[in-house]
Length: 420
Ligand code: GLA
Image (tube, rainbow, N blue to C red; front, side, top):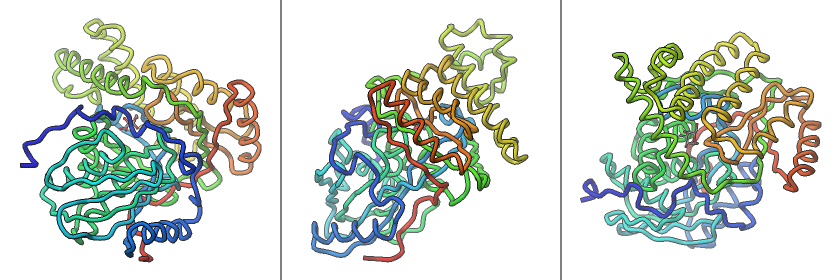
C-alpha cells in the first residue's frame, strides 16, 4: 500500500525547515565542539522524556566549496562536512507508531509507519525517510525518538539533510539492518523530493553520509563516484551567517531546477549526447544559444561554467594552488549572482567584506542562496582578525549581528558508540 501513495508537493513545508522558531537552541550551536558532552546531554534528555535508555546517531551539516546548483544537473560538487551535527536518540517501541520529539522546535509528533500522512512541519523529514526506507524494501519497527540539532536551521548549512540522514540511521539501527551509504543518501533525497516537496539534488545527503575528517569531497553527481581530498592544514573554513533567509528561496529553488531542465531539453535537440546540462559545453551555448530564452541561457551558462570550475578547482587543490582555487570560488559567486540570480545583497556584502581582509583566499555564498551563509577559506593565523572585521563591518552596514563559525572538515554520519 505504501508504494502506491504519492506526496510530492503536498506538504505545507516548501522550504528546508525554514520555519524558524527562536528556541534557545536555534540561536547558536551548543557544545558543538564537544561531542561527548553533547551525547551525554542528549541521552539524559531522552531518559527524562521517555524514562528509557537510548542509542545515539548523528549526521553533520555541510558547506559547499564550489559547484552550486550543479548536483541536480548531474554535474560536480565539492562539499565538506562541518562539525555541527543533528543528533537523534532512539529506543524501540511495540507496534508501528513512531513518536518523535524535537528539542529545536519543542514539539512532539507521532506517526504510523503504515499510514504516512505529512504534518507540514519538521517531522515530515523523519516520516518521509521512514516511508522511503520501507519503499526500498527495508523493515522498520516503531520507536521513540528525540531530535536535537546543532546545525543552524534554515541557514543553508543543510540542516534538513542532517536530520534525514541521522533519522534514517536511527530507524535502521534499531533493526541492525546493513545498508549501502549511497542507497541511504538516495532514500533521504527521495524523502525530501517526494514527501516534503523540495526538489533538492543529492549533494547534501551524500556528504552527510560520506564526509571524512580533514577531507573535502569531490563528487560526480551522475555516477556518484567520488574522491576525498585533503583540506590544506593551514587553512580554516570560516562560515559567515548573514542571518537572513528570503522567503522566495523555496519557490525559486524549484523554479531554477525547472529552468535548467528546460535548458537541457532544448539543447538536447541541437546535438546528440546531451541528456542533462552536465553534457553541454560553452561552445554549445555559443552555437545554439539562440534556441534558449534569454533567462534560461543565463541559467545554463552558470551550470556549464560552474562544472568546469569544480574540475579546475580540484586540480588547483591537488597542485597546492590556493590562489587559483580562490579565483575559481570568486568566479562562482559572480556567476551565481549575475547568471543564476540566487544571491542577495546581504550575501554580496558579506563576500565583498571578506575579500578585503588579509589572509582570505576565497569567499563566496554557499548552498541554495537567497540568504544563509558564505564560506571563506582563511589562513589559520588570520582567523581572529577576520572574525572581528567581518562582525563589526557587517553589523555597521546592515544592523544585523552575524554568526561566524570556524569549522574543521568533519566526519560523516554514524552511531555514537558510547551508548547511554
Ligand atoms: C541546496 C540543495 C542541494 C543543492 C544546493 C545548491 O542545498 O539541497 O541539493 O542543489 O542547494 O547547490
